[in-house]
Image (cartoon, rainbow, N blue to C red; front, side, top):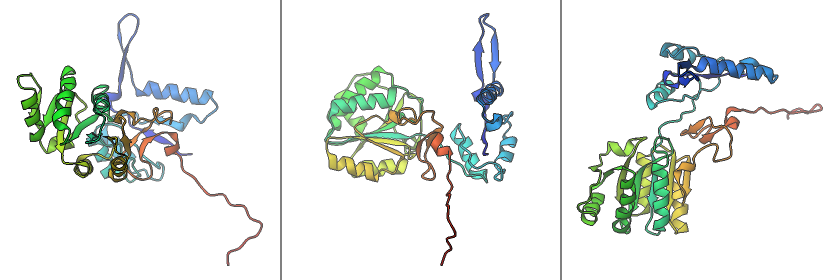
Length: 297
């Protein structure tokens, strides 16, 4: 039997309050114990789920070398933890890196649809990995679309980090309005904010949008809004991300939304799992062959 080892970080500790208002710390130790009891009562091996009862990184370093016992590690936490695990592990690692997700509004987009998708992708839950971090707008529709979407984003107190073309349009079309507007830097385009902050760039057509996403993105989730099927197919084929959308929000990248049940994570790797992962991605296979004396010539 294979055992999945889960590293419960300090930030994973949970605080609940009882009826008297007293703070009660319930950590991963209690959660693991409850799972063990439930497994045993269900007639399943109680040690299927185990807890590493420490948050000391030294213990994690030891765990990463036990490839004779552990077959796969899926680190959940910040980017620094994931990179440290991937660099030090002798055990295969499935990485859930940051979500630098994009929405590209094409010249042939339904702009009302584009506004709804962009707002949903950014502000419905900005702190999750499938939220949009950069909005790309085709230059032909930017003078009309950018003021409209900026007004809606401003109502949600979203700070914009914009390129020069975007700033020129907004300052000319929305002069006097109190906008949260800053100049975008190259590093900003690589950044997962998990906050009410959005990069905005005007691009010269589909190919520049695709090139931007493949350079700055994290291979997580990206979307095109367009009524042109040929451009959509090119975007779907050439954007090198785990999940690519046509006329839909990036917020759908989720195991539950995909019908997978309980989600393990969203892999930004290409093998052996990619995109939303559930129980199937934790399984392997073997070949069983029956014969009656066959030999190979």
